[in-house]
Length: 119
Image (cartoon, rainbow, N blue to C red; front, side, top):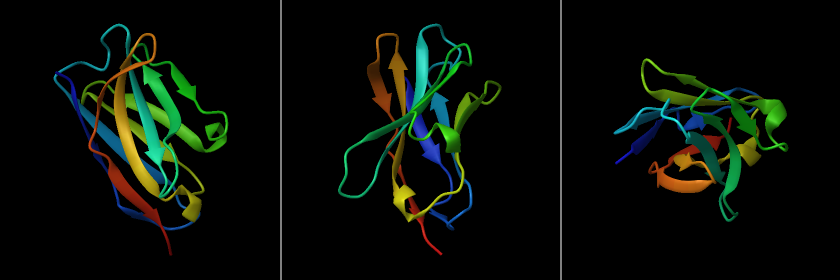
Protein backbone atom coordinates (compact mmCIF):
# COMPACT_ATOMS: atom_id res chain seq x y z
CA UNK A 1 0.00 0.00 0.00
CA UNK A 2 1.29 3.40 -0.96
CA UNK A 3 2.01 5.71 1.96
CA UNK A 4 2.81 9.40 1.84
CA UNK A 5 4.46 11.73 4.33
CA UNK A 6 4.63 15.50 4.06
CA UNK A 7 7.57 17.46 5.44
CA UNK A 8 8.61 21.07 5.52
CA UNK A 9 8.62 24.19 7.65
CA UNK A 10 5.52 24.96 9.64
CA UNK A 11 6.04 28.71 9.57
CA UNK A 12 6.76 30.87 6.54
CA UNK A 13 7.05 34.65 6.41
CA UNK A 14 4.90 36.70 4.04
CA UNK A 15 6.35 37.18 0.55
CA UNK A 16 8.62 34.16 0.96
CA UNK A 17 8.38 30.78 -0.78
CA UNK A 18 6.65 27.83 0.84
CA UNK A 19 8.39 24.53 0.10
CA UNK A 20 7.03 21.12 1.05
CA UNK A 21 8.18 17.62 0.23
CA UNK A 22 6.11 14.45 0.03
CA UNK A 23 8.00 11.21 0.52
CA UNK A 24 6.33 8.17 -1.02
CA UNK A 25 6.79 4.60 0.16
CA UNK A 26 5.24 1.35 -0.96
CA UNK A 27 5.19 2.36 -4.60
CA UNK A 28 7.15 4.24 -7.24
CA UNK A 29 6.17 7.72 -8.34
CA UNK A 30 6.99 6.67 -11.91
CA UNK A 31 4.48 3.81 -12.00
CA UNK A 32 2.19 4.10 -14.99
CA UNK A 33 -1.13 5.81 -14.32
CA UNK A 34 -0.06 7.14 -10.94
CA UNK A 35 -0.48 10.82 -10.16
CA UNK A 36 0.74 12.78 -7.17
CA UNK A 37 -1.12 15.79 -5.93
CA UNK A 38 -1.00 18.66 -3.48
CA UNK A 39 -4.22 19.74 -1.79
CA UNK A 40 -4.73 22.24 0.99
CA UNK A 41 -7.45 23.25 3.42
CA UNK A 42 -7.41 26.75 4.89
CA UNK A 43 -9.00 27.09 8.32
CA UNK A 44 -12.76 27.04 8.06
CA UNK A 45 -12.69 26.47 4.30
CA UNK A 46 -13.03 23.58 1.89
CA UNK A 47 -10.30 21.48 0.40
CA UNK A 48 -8.52 23.16 -2.50
CA UNK A 49 -6.72 21.26 -5.24
CA UNK A 50 -3.39 22.90 -5.99
CA UNK A 51 -1.92 20.69 -8.67
CA UNK A 52 -0.34 17.37 -9.49
CA UNK A 53 2.54 15.67 -11.22
CA UNK A 54 2.03 12.55 -13.24
CA UNK A 55 4.06 9.39 -13.61
CA UNK A 56 5.75 10.78 -16.71
CA UNK A 57 6.57 14.09 -15.06
CA UNK A 58 3.75 16.09 -16.63
CA UNK A 59 2.41 18.75 -14.30
CA UNK A 60 -1.12 20.02 -13.81
CA UNK A 61 -2.07 23.16 -11.91
CA UNK A 62 -5.14 24.84 -10.47
CA UNK A 63 -5.48 27.91 -12.71
CA UNK A 64 -6.06 30.13 -9.70
CA UNK A 65 -2.67 29.18 -8.24
CA UNK A 66 -0.70 28.39 -11.37
CA UNK A 67 1.31 31.60 -11.43
CA UNK A 68 2.73 30.88 -7.95
CA UNK A 69 2.94 27.10 -7.92
CA UNK A 70 5.62 24.65 -9.02
CA UNK A 71 5.38 20.90 -8.50
CA UNK A 72 8.47 18.84 -9.21
CA UNK A 73 9.87 15.43 -8.37
CA UNK A 74 13.04 13.60 -7.46
CA UNK A 75 12.70 10.08 -8.77
CA UNK A 76 15.91 8.95 -7.07
CA UNK A 77 14.35 9.76 -3.69
CA UNK A 78 10.78 8.85 -4.66
CA UNK A 79 9.66 12.30 -3.59
CA UNK A 80 7.68 15.14 -5.07
CA UNK A 81 7.70 18.72 -3.95
CA UNK A 82 5.53 21.82 -3.83
CA UNK A 83 6.78 25.36 -4.08
CA UNK A 84 4.39 28.26 -3.60
CA UNK A 85 5.87 31.71 -4.09
CA UNK A 86 4.91 35.09 -2.68
CA UNK A 87 2.88 33.63 0.16
CA UNK A 88 0.48 35.67 2.26
CA UNK A 89 -1.52 34.86 5.40
CA UNK A 90 -4.27 33.59 3.07
CA UNK A 91 -1.98 30.68 2.24
CA UNK A 92 -2.14 29.46 5.83
CA UNK A 93 -3.58 25.96 5.60
CA UNK A 94 -3.25 22.28 6.27
CA UNK A 95 -1.34 20.94 3.28
CA UNK A 96 -1.80 17.37 2.08
CA UNK A 97 -0.10 15.26 -0.52
CA UNK A 98 -2.14 12.54 -2.14
CA UNK A 99 -1.91 9.65 -4.56
CA UNK A 100 -4.34 9.33 -7.43
CA UNK A 101 -4.77 6.99 -10.36
CA UNK A 102 -6.09 7.59 -13.84
CA UNK A 103 -9.67 8.75 -13.64
CA UNK A 104 -9.02 10.99 -10.68
CA UNK A 105 -9.54 8.39 -8.02
CA UNK A 106 -7.83 9.19 -4.74
CA UNK A 107 -6.03 6.17 -3.39
CA UNK A 108 -4.19 7.48 -0.34
CA UNK A 109 -3.36 10.67 1.53
CA UNK A 110 -0.59 11.92 3.73
CA UNK A 111 -1.50 12.94 7.25
CA UNK A 112 -1.16 16.62 6.36
CA UNK A 113 1.15 19.32 7.59
CA UNK A 114 0.15 22.69 8.98
CA UNK A 115 1.76 25.71 7.38
CA UNK A 116 1.24 29.14 8.87
CA UNK A 117 2.19 32.30 7.04
CA UNK A 118 3.03 35.01 9.54
CA UNK A 119 5.71 37.54 10.27
